[in-house]
Length: 119
Image 1 (cartoon, rainbow, N blue to C red):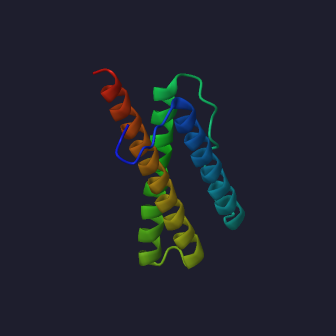
Image 2: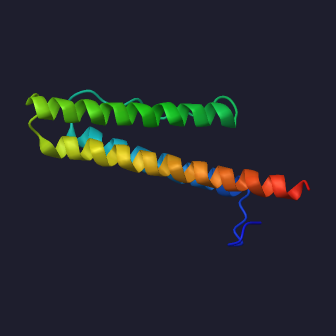
């Protein structure tokens, strides 16, 4: 256990993952409603193990961040005139990154707890 007394189990990590996916889905719905153009691929149900699910989530976060950067560059060039779309993409990228960071932190804490148990 760490100094704070927080213990994470697999169910805690999976619950956090579910929350992240739900928030990501809600953000995609908001973005789809605000755009008439291209959409974002829906989250696919994990077919493999945890590593496959994590890899898919990381690729989706990367795609969201890349799209945000592309929209910002397009706005700076004058190709996109709707600042709301640009800001929405930036917020979505920020939320996706923060959620990924929280999952990483929780996984690291769980790993450290497991390593301390083995002693």
